[in-house]
Amino acid sequence: MFDPVQSSTYKNQRCPTSFRTILPQYGCTSNQLCWFRYSYGDKSTMQGILASETLLFDDGAGNGKLPGIVFGRIHSECNPNPALLKVPGLVGLGGGPLPLVNQIGSFIDKKFAYCLPPYSNENNSLGQLKFGKDTEFSGKEEVQETPMAPGGSQGTYYVLNVTDIGVRDNRLNIQFGGSKMTALLGDARLIIVDSGTTLTFLAKDAYGQVENAVANVINHEHFYHPEKDLLCYHVQNNGDAYEGLPEMTFHFANADWKLPPSNIFVMFTSGIACLAIEAERCPCLR
Image 1 (cartoon, helix red, strand yellow):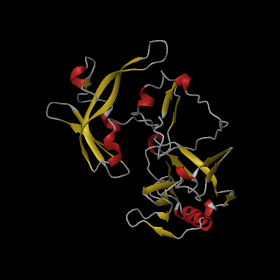
Image 2 (cartoon, rainbow, N blue to C red):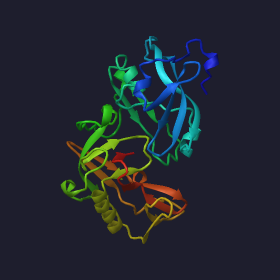
Image 3 (cartoon, rainbow, N blue to C red):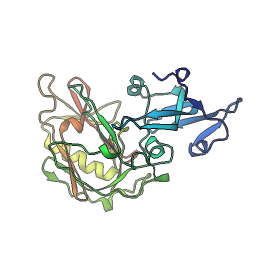
Image 4 (cartoon, rainbow, N blue to C red):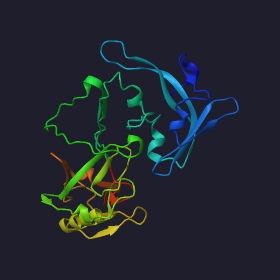
């Protein structure tokens, strides 16, 4: 856990500071320190003091020392996500001016890449986060590329254009033009890539077509989770709990992203698998 008392390069940001105007809620304490309050889509909030620190990056040449990186030192949380209580902090990878990747943009040539382990992570595998020239990943599958769509407010979001969705080997030929426009991005085809979102969210009409297709290929009676309002199935407790559940493919321009059942369904309790997709709150890919 970070202890600023043990650091000779830690500094509190004093008022006024240019970074505070980027935050939606901010102010000055009685001793002129810059405080902030930040809210997330899951309704959790956090409050703290803006500070700066020198960060060290291992770039193989021993010169990855970056002073004056601004971050938020959290003092209090409200309604926190239980999953985040196990981690010491969050790293901002968004496209806005405050996230880490923008502050160190010139050092990493504005390049970063990450690879996350499966949600269940039964093998306790580790994810990877790479910056700069080391952003290439090696693997069995050929790397695919698809262009980014224009982002949301302040360029914060990474947005992709979905052309279709497939369940097992069947493309659904979703008519996005007839889907209700989304409140956040306007176009039902646009979706945010958000690694911090637990579920995937689709425009309501598109979600309805996906839900029906999933229900049609699973030979089990479905029900809706009373707390989560998700499409759920009873699955076997022994052996492969994902057996009989379908794969899903998200089709983008020049790229097809095929996901196994373990990335589409989540096990809320033993023997219950739920589709980790909901109708739109924000159109997000987890």
